[in-house]
Structure formats: C-alpha cells, structure tokens
Image 1 (cartoon, one colour):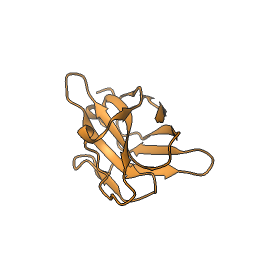
Image 2 (cartoon, rainbow, N blue to C red; image 1 turned 30 degrees about the vertical axis):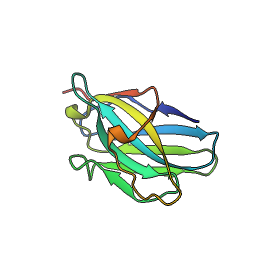
Image 3 (cartoon, rainbow, N blue to C red; image 1 turned 90 degrees about the vertical axis):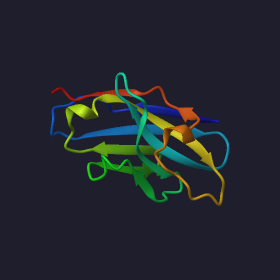
Image 4 (spheres, rainbow, N blue to C red; image 1 turned 60 degrees about the horizontal axis):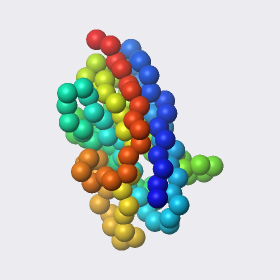
Length: 129
C-alpha cells in the first residue's frame, strides 16, 4: 500500500514559481513510478512530470518541459517535489501526486495518467489571468 499527501499549492501570479511536494509512504517493498498529474476544469487529466523512486530518469510533458523540475528527497522522509517556473494562467489546475508499482527490472516510468493506480487527494494551483 502507498499513501500520498500533497502540499504547497495556492494562488500565484503569472511569471512566478511554485513548488509542490508529495510525501509518500509505502508499506510494501518495491520500486514506484511517481508522477505529478494535473486536471484543469472541464479538461482531462494530463501528465506533468515523472520519476521513479530509485531516482531514475525523469519524464516531462512536452508542453511544459523547461518550466518544470521533478526531484526526490529520500533522506528523512520520502518526498517527491515539483517546481513550476514562469507560471501561466493555463497552468491553473488541480495537481495530483500519483504512484504506480514497478517491477525491479522495469525502466518505464512516464507521466501518462492511465499508468497510475494510486492517487493523492490533489491540490489546487491557481494562476490568475
């Protein structure tokens, strides 16, 4: 079982930066694919960024690459962070932390929403126009 808790959302002005954090706790051993997925009102969920829990390669949605950075902090607690720079009104959405178990040998970890079966509650990010 994996539990995910997001923090760090809010309202920010265009051009500003924001960091989201997701604390994850797993009760069974295994590698996870971790991702940030967002959903704007009236739109489908879209992947933003992904990383595996062994600090493997990162993946980014094409349209946001260059403005997003995902990284892990596995020191005191297991946390996956997402930094968004130069925020735009179209970045307004509810941001979800998501996880999917991976096999020991798997290298496939991508921000593709259907891949994920474990979701956090989501956190709102608003960028006014």
